[in-house]
Image 1: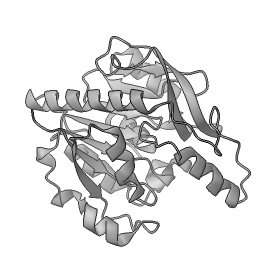
Image 2: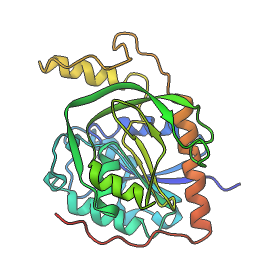
Image 3: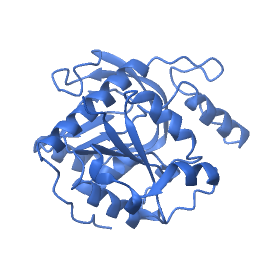
Length: 274
């Protein structure tokens, strides 16, 4: 059996921590190509580790990959996508990869980037950050990405925004996008395109047990007086999401590999309006 092969466009702060994050949630036999941006200085990252583990996109063997995933970013705090000085490079990378891999996914800010680049859906910011572990309802247990998940399951979320409801609603009504889960506090966190070409993970299927605690304690140290994450104890964190998230990402990689093998690659997207 062919090993799954995934490219990860990493724009996380302290980018080196994401190596373990993704390695723990994808199937253990997955080969990962780590991708960095030329226009991003990665100031908070270990430059030695970054240089040893990551390649620039044009140095990556993207044609051998089944799928590409773009990580979250600190830029999720800013309502303006183009405020990221590397925005044009991200757009160009996703557009090119979309014609060469079976599926493109994004996590948190990355999910909203995927929605903007391929469907011209903006994001709408919440009055305050959504942080915690939320009980999601599996609204499409018949979908191939969701058949391995429980009817309700826990999902870490740490985000400032959601897909803009009006444009998102129109895409769902037209059958272009398919919501896969729902919770009262954050709405639809997991959304896939009808053809499987794009997956938007507004939650954090990638988070290990202690990540929300780290974010909380860092915010406390900065004096921002953050609320305690919902359904999560930062002093004694417990993981209630690992199995379901592994099942989802494994199913996505299988879908991407099948689409690529069948030659059903996404059509290149036009540049989003800015």
